[in-house]
Image 1: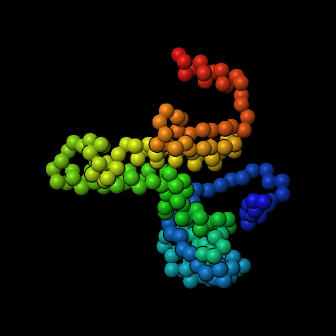
Image 2: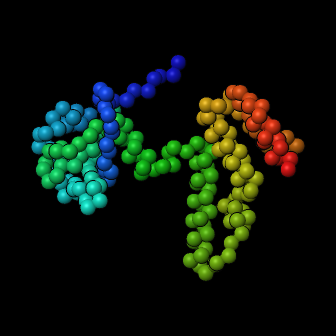
Length: 212
C-alpha cells in the first residue's frame, strides 16, 4: 500500500482569509537536523547564519520580502526568514518540503520522466553542437545533419517521444494502462492506451473531428 503524504504545518481554526506575501529567496542554506531543530524551537534567539546574511533580507518598494531560507538537510523542511536587520527570525514562516523546492528550482530536469530527460539531453547536445559551429562561421543547419553528427537520427527521436508520451500517460489518474509496441514491427501503432472509462459523447466528437 502506498504511504500517505505527510505535511508538517500548523492548522488554523476557522481562518477567515489567507493573506500571503511574495517572498524572494535570496539564499537557501541547508543545515544538519540538530541545527535546524534548534532554530525551529528558538526562532527568536540570535542565530549565526541570520546574522551573516542580514544584508540580503529586506522588504522592497513593491512589498516583496527578500528572504533567507534555512532548511533541514535530512528531513527537508525549512524556515523562510526576513530578519529586518536583526540576527533572529523576526519575520518567518515554516515551509514544509523546502529542500525539494530548492532542488527543483535549481535543477528542474529532476521532475522529468526518463523519456523527457533523454529528449532534454539530446536537445542540449544539438544546441551545443550548433552553437559551436556557429562560432566557426556556419549560419545554416539541417537537424538531420546535426543528429547524424551526434550518431543519431529522427527514428531515435521518435522512440524518445514515444517513451516520454507513454511515461506521462502512465502518471495520469484517468489512464488505466499504457503499452509501447515493438518499433521494429511494421504497420502497428506506437502505443496502446486503455482509459479508466470511456465517454461515448466525447468519442463521437473526436471521431468526427478526425474524419473532417
